[in-house]
Image (cartoon, rainbow, N blue to C red; front, side, top):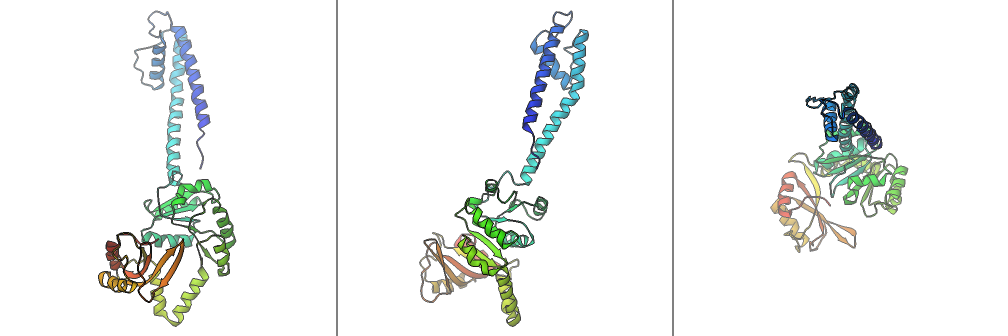
Length: 351
């Protein structure tokens, strides 16, 4: 983006003020004492200058001397240039404001949102599911041409876009990165992702970072580098393909429940936080299982307890483990069940 040259604009204004101020002073000297002249004071001179430059021309104040009229011609002819300068500066200023907004340089107030660093076809498919689930997303891209594409596909109420170099960490704060729930590093290859994770964690440490890997053997390396979730795309696709081969119905359901449910009859797996006003606090897991099925037609399949920042998942646990505030419940549900559950839990899904 071409930045406006404010210094040059200020210098131009100062030069114009000096030139016109000098011409007004000369004009007053030439007109002073002339018979019939009304240009006797500085106020008269400034009034004549303004009405001439603005081409209003009331005719109430006019030079009567020859050289005074020559200065008047200068004022009149130069008014075209002054107009062009003013209009050009206003247009440049408005264009700058518009471009700053389009490029995200004004920042965003999104909180608890997903920040995606890097834009490509895979990232676009992820965004579509996140938008469908009602999440707000901040996309950071260094590809100027992708900005218009993103604006065309998504509403600014849900998706904010920032044009920035990925290593300009000061500018990345425009995406309200510190308030993000998850940062998805969506760069081209695993090596680039690893180097970037190491660098960005020097500036933003206490964030949840997610990466997808082409080489699943690098999972432990990324986890040791501070990544919260490292996902192997090949591993997921190979598992799903194998499932399609020997248990296709399970594969179809698995693919459905890990994505956003678009239709009322489609199912989705979701997790909900147990807050202070949740009616299931203190209830044993087994009783909650039956009550959730009866009240909301959702199936409880597990729970997550957090202790000292460590998440422990209990997959359909046996016994009467009590549900406590701060736990997460994992449930299988259709869209109708989700609506019922939101009314009971009084909270949106997700972490």
